[in-house]
Each structure stands twice: as structure tokens, then as C-alpha cells.
Length: 235
Image 1 (cartoon, helix red, strand yellow):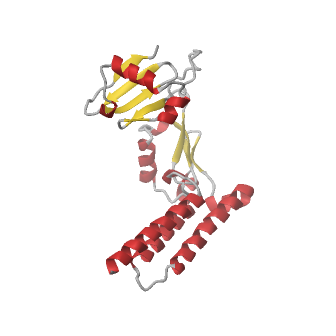
Image 2 (cartoon, one colour):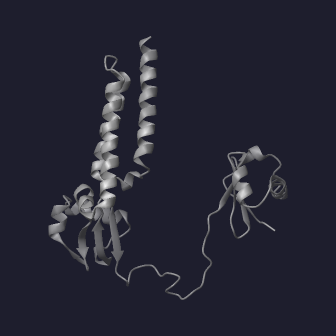
């Protein structure tokens, strides 16, 4: 009976966590500021306690988690409306390197030692610090870099070329199943798709791991247990 109660508590805590995280909005881990991170850990800890503490009424942790979630929602709302509040809650980006020179004051303020900073720079692919013109520590702890113009990659605009804008591809088959909505949005039907598969000597949809169609008219099929793609042109 105790195992069933723990299972029920765990399920309910997971359900509450799901509802609260949906209410707080979608953010990638890299987009979380320190306050969001601390709130997330706190809510998760309360949910875990809710699952295993048999003497703890359900209502107590649910109310506590709801209050923390409301705090996060309220702070996000205030931060959207007020620039000053945004600076208080999320902080300001710090310029660590300006015009090729390290700003020691900013480095100390960020609580980064030089070795940690250099490691982040190397992670972004800059092993020679002299190639970095600006380095900015964002409020979520990530590092943004503007390289010197002489070292940045050549772009299409630099070469004065005209290229067609890339568009989203359509996943038509995923893990052996036809994505009917995607196929409809792409303007084709299942008969067309089966015909294209037959042209590639594929008769069983369940053998297809992934089939992708792009706006250029190219259909790429990845079969299960086959390392390489088969490529064909849509007529």
C-alpha cells in the first residue's frame, strides 16, 4: 500500500510540475537566468519531497510550488514592462573584451577567473584571443563574441552573390509512419508519396526511418539500419 501511495504522489507531483512549467513558459536551459535556475531547482525539490513524504499533505507542497511559479511569472511580467526591473532581476550583459582589450573590472565583476574565461572563448572556436574584438557575457552566463573583421568568415554578401533563401523542410515519414498533416501542408497525397518510394525500390513504409522533402523538390529517404541516404528529385 505504501508503494502505491508513493507512486500516486510521484505521479501527482510530476503532473503539477508539468502544469507549472507550461504556465511559466518555454525556455531553453541556456536561456535561464540565475533566478529562473534557482526557482526551478526549488520547485523540483518540493515536488520530490511531495512524492516521498507520506506525512506531508498534498496541499502543502502544491501551494508552495504554485507560489514559486507565480513569483516567476510575476517577475517575468514586471521585467517585460520595466527596463529597470529587468536589470534588477536578470542583470546586464558585461563587456569582457572591448576593441581587443580585456576589461579587468568586468572580468572581476563577472566572478570569472581568466582561465574560465579563456575556456569559454576556446569553446566558441577562438583559440587565439587576438582574433576577438568584442566578448560579451550575457545575463544567462553564455558568452557572445564579435571577431575582428579580418578573421571572420566570408559571407555571401561579401562576395556579392545572390542566393535563394532556405525554407523549412517537411518531414513526410517519421519512424515508419506517414505524417499526414505535413504531407497535406506540403501539397501532396499518400499516393504521390508511395509512388516516390516505389521509385526508390521501397515498398514498406515501416522500413523508412525518415523521409524529408524540401522546397527545392528534393526528397531524401533514410531507411532503418542503413547508414546513408537515398536522394531523388521530385518531379
